[in-house]
Amino acid sequence: GVPLDADYVFDVRVLPNPHYVRELRPLNGRDAPVDEYLAAQPEVMEMLGQIETFLRRWLPAFEADQRAYLTVAIGCTGGQHRSVWFAERLAERFAALATTLLRHREIEFPAP
Image 1 (tube, one colour):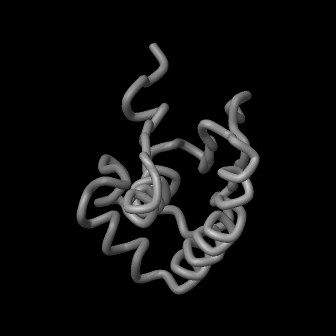
Image 2: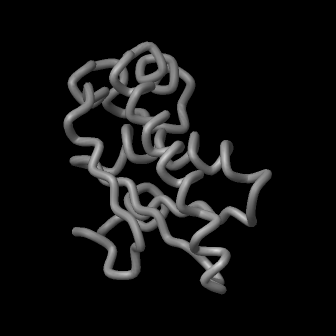
């Protein structure tokens, strides 16, 4: 479900799903073959750029409002491939701007 503490939630389910590629299915968004697959999809790179642009535009407003943190959630169907990949890429891109904490709910804290 949607994290209740998220300031922004981005749904990436409309993008190509590595789950449907047999050799990528057991992997996750941190694995090089999944990275290569997603990075090769023009619409994936377009959405990544749009989310990054949006956050870069509004991050100063949160800082000016004395916000201690901003929580961004990325969601996909299984929480293994696309959302993990997006979170990793965004964390890399924002690490120089602010303290960036990264958590993958489905791969770090899987349901019992």
